[in-house]
Length: 294
Image 1 (tube, rainbow, N blue to C red):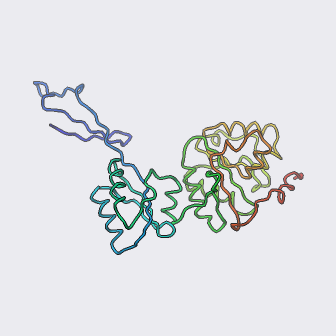
Image 2 (cartoon, rainbow, N blue to C red):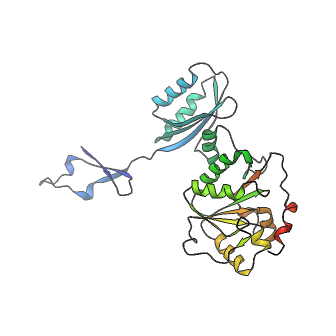
């Protein structure tokens, strides 16, 4: 049997093979009888385990087991107290299933998670701790101002996703909301544009250029300005943007929901940013100036 490895223009590997019996008498190839097999693609997994007894050589034993299974360790870090997280990579899902069963027999650790990694998992390994989430509303994530680096990293990973997604961002004035959105857009290598904003003296756009109206654009919307200060043309533009298969980030989502036709079901993620963990986000303290004339 002859074996050939080919690579398409999209960089996906293809393996083509044939038997000697497939040759014609004149030694020419019968291309119709070639069979094409797509090479298996590597897939990432997140594994997290709790350490009961941190004996010398424990990590080495686990790494050796992964090595014998030919499962690659992409990233490893401690995650909170006596917990370790790993990003793994393999092209064989059965190896991950076997790994989980084998580690159940290890007395020194307990595997808490073994799954396809979420954004929260990736950031936990990267930063060494989990992002705080609301216990009742799991789509709400909380940050403080001294965690702006993690917030930007989080937004950057979220913005990399394609398709229609709406993100709400709560927070008091001058806490870093808009700056975090812009920095997250840069991290995701996507263009950003203001639909409405107070950063540039209560900007209310009634139209955008053709270059801006692209699915790859991050649309930044001030929920108070777009509802309290908006006009008919702006609201028409807002409805068009909300229907686009793109990412929309809405500051002050509670006012946006209260003053528009949209509700919380339209939001995929809600982010809360505070100066301190116990700071109250109260809109009554800063909404009055939005209604004043320029």
